[in-house]
Length: 107
Image 1 (cartoon, rainbow, N blue to C red):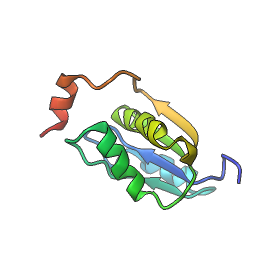
Image 2 (image 1 turned 180 degrees about the vertical axis):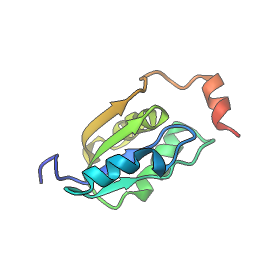
Image 3 (image 1 turned 135 degrees about the vertical axis):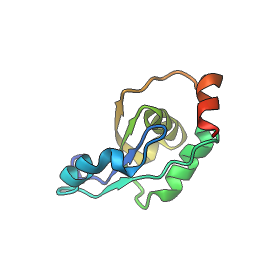
């Protein structure tokens, strides 16, 4: 299976849900399976990444994340790189989460 036909997992950013990727899921879903995961806020990035993995039925997939979703995606690659066939990071950064940003996720 090529990377262009592997299932695609999309991780939304902070305060976003599946609606963020509606158009992409429809367009890309014509040629591959697409899953937009639900992100639980308020815990560590490590715990969120574990929760996201629990939602994914495939052993290998392409992964994309926007903003905080990109940070989660990077953590997923750190935890289980063998499962990630390709990675798209959009409007994100590679830095550790600051206490100020973590506090915004808490409510």
